[in-house]
Length: 124
Image (cartoon, rainbow, N blue to C red; front, top):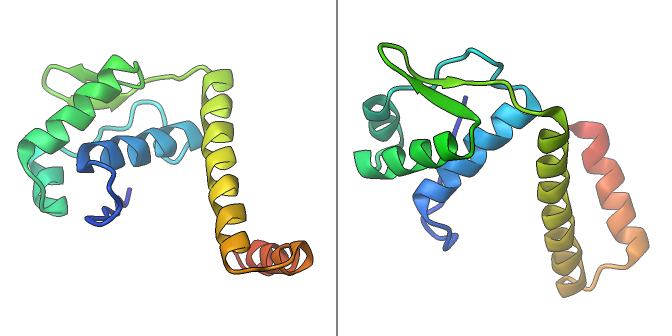
């Protein structure tokens, strides 16, 4: 699992961590039973404070996508498929809105945006 943080996005670091882990769980990249990196390990890897990672993990526990098992750490639990699909759809809707806004700012036509999307879709 790779987590990328942006210091210029305006989104708090713990929220970026939480969002990326949640997305990995919902998409199946982190399957049920997988352990998350330890708090200390992830904090060191991301070069953030231990409190930042702790807050992200605790929020994920509150959302019931991971549990903190004694002796094992934070473990991914089964998530309702409808909940996962809805969350991923919401993320997609937000991304599409951002793309449309950026295309309008760049004064791209709908056809140019469609072409760009087709190109990216075929290379990803």
